[in-house]
Length: 152
Length: 152
DNA sequence: TATTGTTATACTCTATAACTATA
DNA sequence: TATAGTTATAGAGTATAACAATA
Image (cartoon, rainbow over all chains, first blue to last red; front, side, top):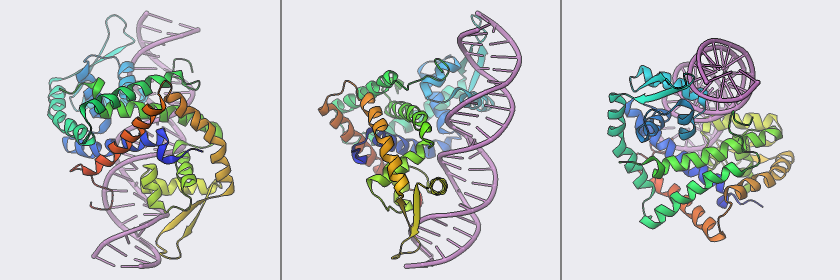
């Protein structure tokens, strides 16, 4: 019938929004919001990404992201440059301050991951992460799946 | 250092928000939003829950939920009654129309779960769901964990 | 014509706090 | 005094579409 206690989207949303809400409160003391943190981590992972790539990686809407980047630029965390090879595209780079802030917050982020995974063996942790990856990739097979501008 | 590709909150958010965004678009054709759907499922699971319990179960803020319920009431999906035993509390019940709509949407919801879990064995599916449950419960151990009104 | 990003709009969600009414 | 829910407000986020610049 659809049992809530074993309904995947419910379990996923509940765990995800719980971690997000708690961590969001935590990063506030660093003067940033959760979306800003997501952009910082994404850029730390790979600097100089284009806005569209960043939107994909952070799961933030492009139009929202554009204004998040405005804010981050005002805060001196990132810089934007149009690409020489295709000047429609804009590459986003961490500033020194942005990289430094990201590194300062990382231990906190790690501690949240560790707390969330309390009682998980290394093997279980790997299994869980691999499964979340598979879930995400499966979503592309959905008939209703429609990336924002690509096939709309 | 914190590798994005294996950072749990990232993987969780990415999978969760992807399913949520896709399903949100899908339920729109039934005239409802994702939060409304979450309330419907939660009430179908257990009818007559109090507003606070619903907020917990749906991961929707109490103040947001209050207005979502206003909308649902106008749409004729739910009814609210103060409890006889404690008239501070409000119990929320599905109407016949609410229950009927929920049942009509359920096959679609199931199909999303099935698509997300494509390639997962029954055992893997059970493992994943159990792990998401453990994750959620672990969050209560966080030092920063603070349920909204309880210990703030 | 299609694509990338920005901007505009209206709506929704969140966070906080004030408020009402109960307990 | 504390609790349950509603209401108010400001600040973010989302969805859509229009727009400018470029390809």
